[in-house]
Image (cartoon, helix red, strand yellow):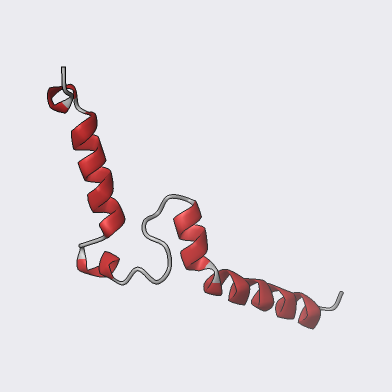
Length: 64
């Protein structure tokens, strides 16, 4: 492989990773999936649901 081929391959891999960064971030647990615009505003529905679930799992909220 020539130097130019190595550089082209590295750039192609970086381009693919750039376009897949939201999917990779979501898969690694870094937040909302792609297309969830409310994450930037701080009102992520997934985070709110997780907080509600955590509150409901506390022993003080469980019916006896």
